[in-house]
Length: 354
Image (cartoon, rainbow, N blue to C red; front, side, top):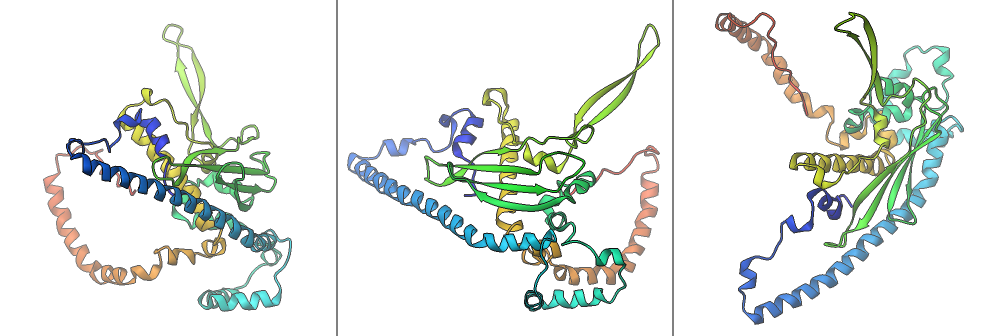
């Protein structure tokens, strides 16, 4: 269930008639006995599609079943995170054995002096914010201002939809100065593909955030002075400009009529839809089930971002840094002579990492 609905893509592309897969002249030219056999293969494929559709329904029901089994663990996790309950000695000792390397790190840090305020901290402060910041795809969406709001994020829950196939993410917030909602949700709906029988992403719906006055992070207010040509008087003009914020996640991507879009715009919308759905899957499949590993950074290891992967390369650069510096000095002398006629204010192009 990691695909976008073909019907949704077709809406962007105008109609199914433009899609790849139309009958070729070769098939039309085949003898009648061969065409009969192809019809038989079509019938077998239809039976396979029925079984495949049932397979995806069964998988979804299995996911629901295990969410029911996971839920008591998630509830206990939340009680500890928000400071509602304290773990037992047995839980703590068992947890130490789960990750001995992390246990040793904690022992080392415990030797450092801590103030009384930190000793009296409630639950696990900034648990979900820290977990999200360790996930590269999610962290890219979080601005400095977002962090202030996300400190009040107390829980993220997964719920499977009943009336329509799909799932919903529920973000619980403690009282904060930014909005009055106590829970923000993002729902992803599936539909069965007519072509393959798979359950595929169809659409998303999100909560409308009730922002407090002057606290809406989804736009900024720009002020600009304008001078009247004849009277020479000035006035201040204000306009709202959309701003980047994590909370745009709760505003579904609008799909305009295909007739109003060119090919590049169609591709852009398709990429946005796919990225949005993948982000929902990241919360569903990774962040919620393994939240403590994202909080501690342990998840980065099984995601392939362990620091050990870079040790050998880092050593190489350290060993060769002096030699490289000497080469750079020589190059700098050549560059000065070669580019002496360049404008004084010319700057090198910005390197943007994707």
